[in-house]
Length: 131
Image (cartoon, rainbow, N blue to C red; front, side):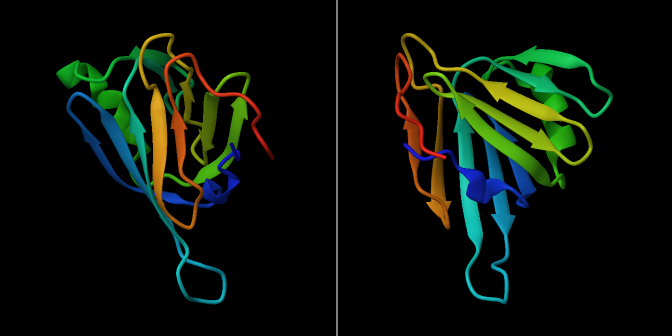
C-alpha cells in the first residue's frame, strides 16, 4: 500500500465522532482543478497529541472523552508516515499529532476519497508500504 503523502497540506475541514472518529481532509489542486477531498476513519483506540504537547489515549465511542479531537478542526497536515504493519502518524501545523496503530482483531483505520489512493488497515495490519 502507498503511504498517503497526498494528505500533506490538507486542512481538517470537519471532525465527527460516534463509534468511529472521522476527519474530513481537503486541499485544492495546485493551479486549480480537483485536489484532495478525503475522509480518515478511525475505528480503534489511538493517541492524540494536542497543540500543548499533551498526549491523550482516545477510543472511538467514548463520547465527551473525544473532545481533544475538536482541536484538530482547521489545522493543516504537515507530515504523514506509516510504519511497520500500518501505524499511521500525522502531524499538524500547531504541533498536534495523531498516532493510530494496527489492531490485532479489528480494522483500525481507513482512508477514502478523491486525490488519494484508498487505504484500509485491517486486522493484524498491512505490510509493504510504498513511499
